[in-house]
Length: 295
Image (cartoon, rainbow, N blue to C red):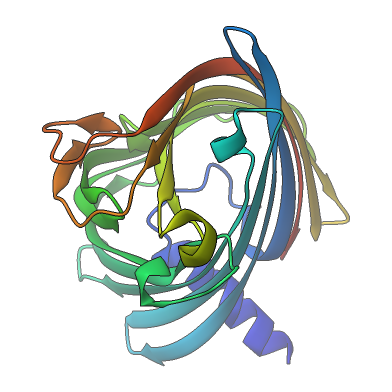
């Protein structure tokens, strides 16, 4: 059993397209809560978010590994305009394949598929998926760089995310990691168990609404934020995090059902094949707490 747990952890770390900032962050499972205060003209609302995940092994062949990850997402939008006051959910399965080359470089390929809706009346229209690859170039123990691209089929069209990655230990206490430009992260290791990190993050999410009540309309969330976090590792297995930050843009758009092909680079539309019925441009305070079981 102990060997199986260690195998899961190693796989979860080596296959993930998101570079971790510390070797302590080998997550087997975890849960997080987030609160975003949203303001727009005379609207003063908020959104609460719950995320939970678990990693599991699939197969290992020589220097190649195959890993799965199940994730559950729940969002509640409160005190906004009527069409945005929704409870939406995501249930997704992720797959990661990683192979190590003779020079210690790595190829990573990932895919994801799941249901993203209010779960009132589930159908094939609620399915979203994404695929991508990441090449990781090993320079030495202190520096790894890489490049890659991710593609997501969103309800409004297509999202493309080309990126550069970095894993650079500047000195024994300071480390720069992440995917540029969508998620750079700077971490300072204060003590063996305490660390402080600062990150920027940009993302797009879409959730389908009920066919009966909303005729398969959907909500799109464009989010760019800064988050500063304190992490504490308890007894080498329990990682607790608390963070505060600011949403520079937490924009919500409401769309009628459409199969049009809007193309998005990161969070920015390159064309507008489908136009939203309405839009809320919000920003505000962010609070986050999380727990991860690690080895």
